[in-house]
Every structure is written in C-alpha cells, then in structure tokens.
Length: 316
Image (tube, rainbow, N blue to C red):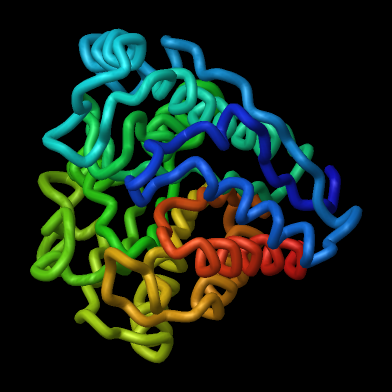
C-alpha cells in the first residue's frame, strides 16, 4: 500500500458547473488545485484521473427514467433538472458522470489497498435524490459510492459524515430506513437555509431509528460551536464502528460564503479530517474517501479542501 494520499484532478470533473452567474461555476477545480500546488506536498500526494461512470453504476442509486432524463436534457442544453437551481447546461450528463466515476475510482483504489486516503474536489453532490436533481446536484456520487461498496466489495457498515453548511438531504432520505448507513451531519439549521431539513429529531425510521445523527447549528455558529458538535459525532462513530468512511467536506460552512451564514474557519475542516483518519485507522483499515461538496467563496474552498488533504497527509 502506498503511504501517499490520492487526489483527483482532470478536465472531466472540472467541467461540472453551470456557468456565470450561477454560484457553482467550473472554476472551482482550478482554484483548489492552484492552492494545493502552493502547499507543496510534493511526493506525499499522487494524482488520479477520472473516468466516466457506467449507466449501470449510476443505476445503483438513480432510477432509469431519471438517468435518461439527464442524458436527454444534457443533449438539448436547456431547461431545468429541478425547480430552478440546477440548469440542464450542455454536457452536464458527461460532467456529472465523470464526478461519479472519479469517486468510484477512488473507492476502488482504497478498497484494493493501493491507498488509505483519497480526495475528490468536485464531488459530494449530496442533494440529488434517486429520481431527481436538487440543489446544484445532478447525480449523487455519495449515494452511488455506498451502493457500489456494498455490491462490489460487500462492505455494509458505511459511515457518511457531512460538514457542508447544507443538510445532506439526498443522502439522508435515500437511506433513512437503512440501519447500516451511519449518517452524521453538522449543518446550518434548516429553518434558515436550504433544503429546510435535518432537524435533530430526524434520526431515521423503522429499523434505522436512532442510527442517524443530525446536528443543526444556528446562523453565525463558529469553530467553537463546531468542535462542541463534533464530540457528539465522534462518540457516535466510535459506537457504530464503521467499515468505511465517506466525508462530504463542503466549504460553504466557512465565514464569508455568499449563500450561507456559518462562520467556521478551515481549521474545522482540518480537525474533522484528522479525527476521521484516526477513526478510519481504528475501525476501517484506514479507509476514507473525502468529497469536496459545496463552497462558493473560492478562497474559502481552496483553503478548506487543501487543509483536508494536509490532514490526510499528516495522519498517513
């Protein structure tokens, strides 16, 4: 096993975005990689390159009708894939498929013990539901990764940890009744922010009741509030003893994001990544894959994601 950290880059995933004036632009990939280069990790990281996901891989999570809809509307290059957040820009099917493919490549590399840690900047599209787009998210690479881990590798107890400012509703409701999907999400309170979900009382249903942890924070919450919430996340994961960890590390939770109201610094992201690496080493043979998620202040996302990679490097 290599002791380097695997980071994905490529024009294929950089193309995921919706153009000006949409906040999710295609410049996010380049901004992050420029900051990563300045960090000068050298031979402590390797670069991976995405491949397109197969239709059968998309269908592990999404319905056939929805996949066909995205393909058709991507070719037409007009209209909306949801109620007005996610435009059907030309080529969005291919870009979204590449994001999924990059995540599945990372999962393969980690599960085959080539690496312990992997990071994909343009990924973590956690709002997409099984049958529709939502909140800038076309295909839910996080959900597909869960189903792929189960189908291809027999991994059942998977921890999904989400520190994006927005609640990961696409993941929560897709696995709300699944007791083996260990879900922990710290986010801005849905009374103030899209998608309006993720109340503390939402803990799963049926056999999964009590297996989901939602921690909504008030607008203006800072690093001290994050650290207090994190103690609950860590205790929850310790009790759950997962086999694999997925981290959605959206940077829209940092102070100065144009569409959210939290006030974290990049230290929160570095702290969470390091803590999850220690848990991964304890329970998961070190296996953790992180996905960049949201973040619309370019300086913030560049710093936060680079600090996640730095934590991965420092805890190898």
